Image (cartoon, rainbow, N blue to C red; front, side, top):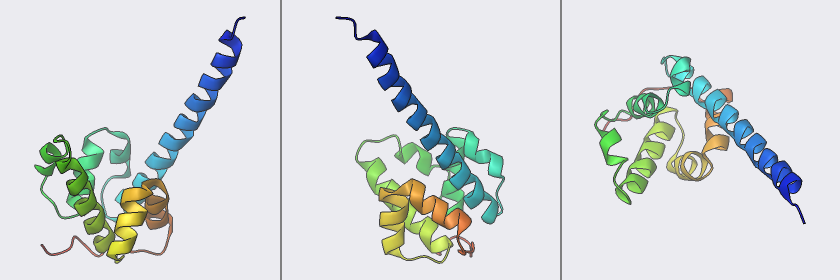
Length: 123
C-alpha cells in the first residue's frame, strides 16, 4: 500500500501551519519593534531580531552568547520576557505567561494593544 499521497498532504498541512506561525511571529515582532522606536524590518533578520529584543529589554547584546548555553538560555529568556513586559508597562505575570510561554499571542497583544513603550527597566 502506497501512503505517499497521505504523507504529502500531512506534510503540507504542517508546513502550511508552520508558515502561518512564522508570519504571525514576524508581524508581532515588527509591531513591537516599531512601538519601541526600532526598525520593524529587524523582525525578519535572524539573530539580529533577538539582539533588538535584548536592547528593548535594556540588556546587553552580549546576552546573545548566554542564549547559546543550554538551561542558562531558559533563565535568560524568562528574564528578557519579564524585562520586555516591564518596558511596555506590563507586569511579571504577563511577561512570563504572555511573552515566555505563549509568546506569539503575547507579542501580538503588545504590538496591537494599547501598551506603550516606556523604555527599558532600570537594572
